Image (cartoon, rainbow, N blue to C red):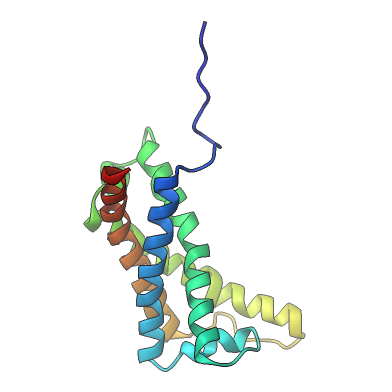
Length: 165
């Protein structure tokens, strides 16, 4: 009797990694563009005590790569779900539905990281009380844009790279 190894918990395919990294760079450029246009790009580097445009953009792209992984895991999980509503399951293939899920993901990122997580973490590190929730609307627009762009581009690039592999 032959057994096959489960794909759950295994390492992601090279196509999925390439798609995730490429999409994260595109969405990171959109995020950085929004933050630059609103004059808030400097705040990304300020959190780490860094200065300079190179540091600002490097951090934006690093954060984009970190935020892209959980989004890909989410849409992959939704696409395999047995009792998942069809629009959520199809977000893996559809740029429009992916953008909708991405927008929701961007809002959740903002709430968890900027509005509540950031002030809590900074308060623990510095001992200074920060307002909770933090109302940084420029980052709200930026992260909403990031999620929407990531969600729209991921299905397109996934199909593109899958054809070439």
